[in-house]
Image (cartoon, rainbow, N blue to C red; front, side, top):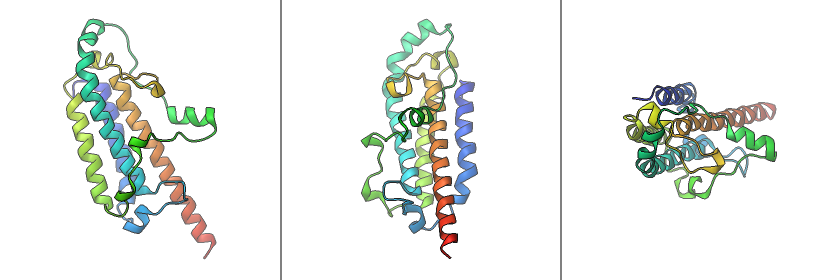
Length: 191
C-alpha cells in the first residue's frame, strides 16, 4: 500500500473485525438473522449492510479516482486531512435519532436466513480486498486530493473515505454488541 494513512485505516478495519467476528462465528443462523426489535437489523443484516457499503465505495472509487487523478497531481503539494470524524454520532446528537441508510445500502429481505456467518464474512472480506486493490497503488499526496461527492460525509478525500469505513463498521459493531448485551440481560431476567 503506497499510502500509509490508507494502510493504517485498513489495519483498523481488520483489528475491529478480529475483535468481534470470533464471537459472531458461534451464532446459529437463527441468532444471526433474528432482530432485537422490529425496526432494528439483526447481526446478519448489519454485516450484509457493511458489505453493501464496501461495494458502494468500490463503485464510487471506480468513478472518482480516474476523474480526480489529474487534478490531484496539480495540487498534491497542498495539505489535506488524513482522518475524519464520526458523522454517525454527529447526526445522532443533532437529530436525536440514528441516521437511516439509503435504500441502496439496505439489506434485501430475500437475503435473510440464506447465508451463514462464514458466508457473510467471506463476502465482506472479498469486497474489502477489491477496495484495497483499487487504492493500493495511489500515493498518499494524490489520495489526499481525490475528493468524493458525498455531502453527508462533508466531501471526504480518499483517505478519509477509508477512515469513514472503519468508523462506520465500529458504529455497527457497537450497536451489535449493545443489542446482544440487552437481549442476554433480558433473557436472564425472564429465567
